[in-house]
Length: 175
Image 1: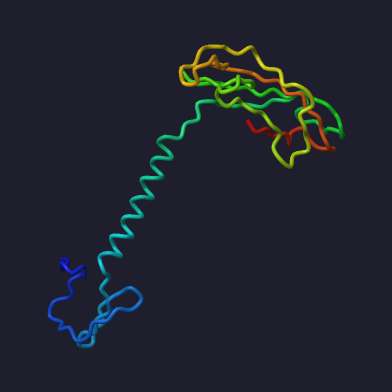
Image 2: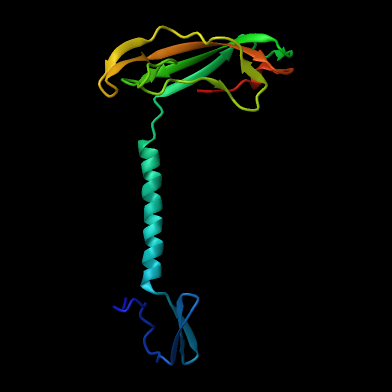
């Protein structure tokens, strides 16, 4: 049971002798029993932030979408590469449902183009132009221009070069 003044009701049969606030808690000395009462504002504050946290986590999981599955293959898989040795890697995108993936090049004022880069601190560099399939070009009412994109799937061939002696299996790309 709760009093309207925001304190939890004290146990029955105890008479209040002294009431004082210490560290945000009301402390009452009763006959030889010490009872701690928490102001409801602290309880409500704590519950409010816990509830906000749960709502945030739910929204992150409910609305986060990843409609593209990526895979990486290399013709140098399992090999040790020497410095400046060239090889090729293929990045494949499997695109779900009605989603689409924007192409590597977009006209000015259009959507953000897909980019493929070597992960930082990896001993590789892109050594040439990335080859990509011909994208679909359609008018996009959101941008009021023709945009380029892929549906269902796309495969990008990336020419790479090792910048130091390393295993080809250490290759990692950011898309």
